[in-house]
Amino acid sequence: MMEAIEKEIVLQKDYLSETINTVYFGGGTPSILTIEQLSKLINALKKQFIISPTAEITLEANPDDINTNKLLAWKLMGINRLSIGVQSFDETDLIWMNRAHTAAQASNCIQLAKEVGFDNITIDLIYGSPVLTDAAWKKNVDTALAFGIPHLSCYALTVEPKTALDKLIQKNKVAAVDPDKQAHHFTLLLEWLATAGFEHYEISNFAMPGHRSKHNSNYWQGKDYLGIGPSAHSFNGKTRQWNIANNSLYLQSLAQNTVPFEIEVLSIEQQLNEYIMTSLRTLEGLSFAHIRNHWGESFAIIVEQASSNLLIKGYANLVDNNLVLTNNGKLMADGIASDLFFVG
Image 1 (tube, one colour):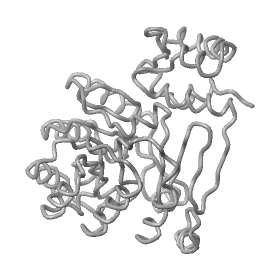
Image 2: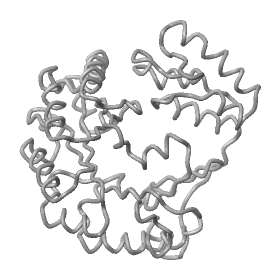
Image 3: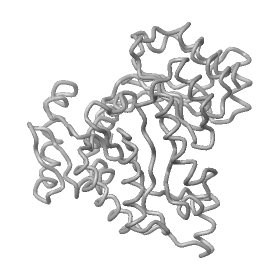
């Protein structure tokens, strides 16, 4: 797999022509890679792409994979941002979610990272599980704040079809997820983090000033990106492509110097829908001027007219002529975006 990924890096070298300002190792558990393996990937990227000396280089890491030796090596090879999958500091919650790490490991790995010198750290927190009380949810957030974590990604627990958790819920062996409880936890989160001085710059992401994720912000701003590896997605504004998910077929194709991907050419309507979906998730909101400049006056007028009802219902406000969701609107962001989509 390592050889195949390195080969894909070479084959995809022309997809991005500009200087690379963000690199993100994620979409799984890259922290299980050995120090040598990860170093080889970084060197392979540097050979094929122009990577800015000030690039944000993020590594997703599981708490149980983190130790002092790895942290020191990661820092030496240029990784300057850690995304740690904490999920919860509550033992009961972690057991219910079937996580491999303990609450003690969740805390200890952050302490280790800070001692080694990582100050640009983000952690994931999950809310809305049946066993997570309001008090435990507040303790999770307070623990993150006490560590001085400058960025939080917070997600409502989702149950994917046909997973072990889904089957247990279907058999009534564990409690089902309560959407009202999740909405309540989200509302509490907005209040707590606003008080702590965090920017709610995207639906699921909160940052102290100056600590937004540069990489993820590229997605929401519609910038080009290249994904490497099985299932990886790439986007250049006009087309979206995604690598095959099957590991064996991925390896077979790369052995023949072929990147196995499918591609979709986005219509004007689809490009606009992409912008509607991503921009509404952000603090800055949807810009009518941007729609006028990129897709024309007629599209801007249609979106303005369609969004008027959101203003009346209190789901959005106009801020500098941008459509920005209110806290109530954020609870229904996906549905609101869908209502504004063009069908074509």
